[in-house]
Length: 485
Image (tube, rainbow, N blue to C red; front, side):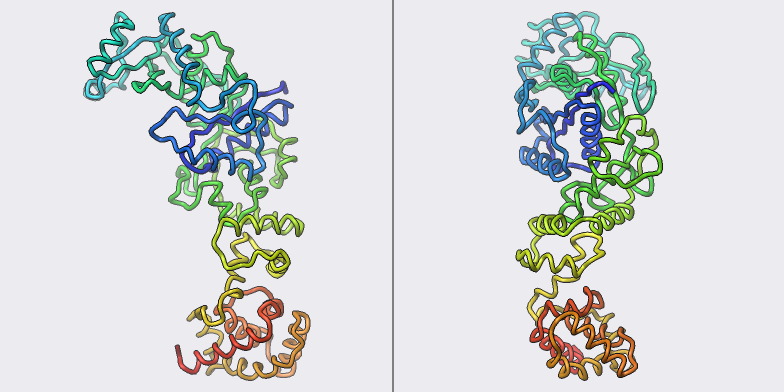
């Protein structure tokens, strides 16, 4: 594989979408695999939708995923500036070249006039195509139109010929000349459109491999023609299949979080998310589990398919569960601290306590599970409620057998050595002596001290609470049982 220079060029409107993350990842992998370079550029010429705070969010999301770039914003390089909003003079120069060569022309149509043209096309049952004027307006005509308050744009004069794109994923894709029209390359506000800015930047920055979503494939003919008119080399193309939900609909927020930051805040590990995203439209044999370094070695465009990818959230949960089980203690601690930094919780920031929580919750799916199981242990002893279903099934069932167990063991627990091991041993012996199953004792205890039937192992739970707080919580549970509250 020749050395590739790839790029990721997001428009900053919010946090990084998982689809954008996949595009960034694939471009990163292509560059690393070929010994080339990966560039990060910000495409912010759409000033109406631009959100400056989103730039830092995108940068943070990429770095959390472990996707680093060799050139671009915050890194620098020889091809900057790397924000399109700082490259207006460059675009203006290239647009003028096209105007001078007769490859582009001014147009002054108002929105109302364009709307009427489209309506006429509908009435004729035709697809609207802009009608090129017989003679192109001059710069003086454009100035007069501006003075008259008309919107002045620049349109590219499309050559009347078919355009065939050779794509590494979709093969040869041809756009017939009859389906093209003279598209806008500079808007009335003076900013270039995506097509012009994207083509100029890729060429001047030396990008020789364009990897992006399938939704851009139908627009690529515009880029081919612009490059040809400007005398620029053509890159290789690879368009990625769409990402759909499990019902075959385009992935959207209706099915839950779709931003990288949301998964981070929900307690996922970046290595699990990267592994999962890599398989959205790419595969190499039957293998599924990869580290980022292993993906660099295995990744090739030939593994990218045409079929739409399915975003299987259950599979992502399974990937994260496995990643957490395989990670060492220090990695998990770093991940848990990152999760806590993004969420308001009552968990302490004491590293020893956090390590203890990680051990207590072995087998967790996401860091949110730890909070769900252990957050109540750090709450005030009189602040948590009791799950009605747990009370009915564990405490009240069989004429209040659960309450009876709590009443019996509360004074006995006051004398037990307070370590997880000693508590587990004592509970086991108590059950054996009374011919009781462990659940008949452990579950009432669990409901008493947490309000639910879910917690880490009961011995570790009680040890963390401490003797005094455990006894206080049991007493509170018994009181509410008597009062029926």
